[in-house]
Image (tube, rainbow, N blue to C red):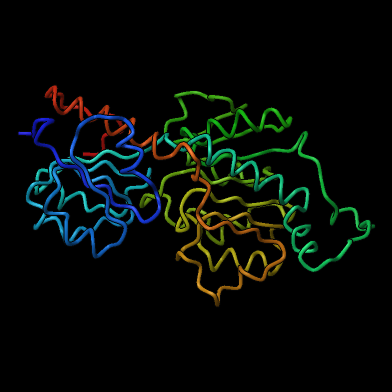
Length: 322
């Protein structure tokens, strides 16, 4: 049985987000506490009926979390959760898909614009107090977006929002999704993921907005990169492991693609020894595409909706995983 409201205790576990403070502002009267560090989480998880967490989650602590009935993930990604272990212990799980869809789509658009308009090198020149002159080499100049083709890999909430933004810049938007019959949602054409190899050669920009699954791991590998235009840009706001990073580094070094905008990398933080740090044709942001001042409240909206469903005895949760 799911605990009654007056008996419920929620653990918010995040090292930066002000989850407990924003939850307290709702005046729900539900007992809750926040932990900021992994050792605090390990020490107090046994007190919780509900955990609201993301990367602080630990599968090895499930056996000692004997009160735990429900996990509301703070993130959309769920690869950190061992679903088999959670099912064995009767723990429900929902993710935060959609909470930051607008933020991630806007970030992807920002990376596209920054690379096309050389904003990243402008910032480098500003730091070095260099006033760059005009560029006589036409292909090396800043460029416009209108008339170019954007390929969105994964037309979910984020990809659909990005497609709508891209149309405002007169881009032609082609997309892939698991079920192409569900429609375009802003894209000019939608295909199944199995058509990716056919679509890559025509794309000026390829944006990854797909979830990390066994099928999408290393989806953009050496073979896929070889199909892209030498002038193409790759933008990854999905997960680092969707891209074969070693193959990407080689493609960038050999100028087989023009540039990359990466919000995610295979290993995070990106190791200091990675060649990506020093590449002039790479723009890196530290997995911040989903950051927004509205994030905490968006997750809390989901949490409260799911708590109401559990109290009503409903079996389906919003963004249900388990």
